[in-house]
Length: 73
Image 1 (tube, rainbow, N blue to C red):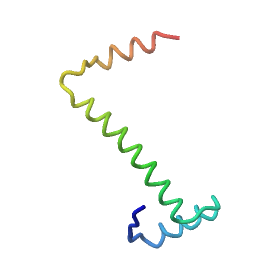
Image 2 (cartoon, rainbow, N blue to C red; image 1 turned 135 degrees about the vertical axis):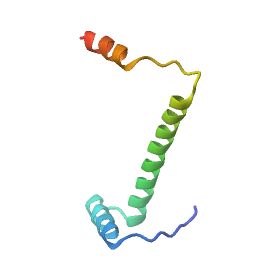
Image 3 (cartoon, rainbow, N blue to C red; image 1 turned 60 degrees about the vertical axis):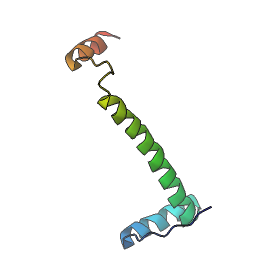
C-alpha cells in the first residue's frame, strides 16, 4: 500500500478530526473512504459526460421527454 502526504487548511483538518472521532475511525480511514467515494463519483460523472459527448448517441427533445414523463402516473 502506498502512502501520500497532503497539505490541508487547518479548518479541513479540524473537520476531519471531528469526523474521525464521531465515526470512531482514524484520520487515514476517513481520508481513504472519502477519496474512494470521490473517485467512484468521478468515474460515474466521467462516463456520463462521455455519453453526452457521443454524437452517435440518440438524443430526444427535452419538451418531448417532459411531456411523456408527466403523462405517466
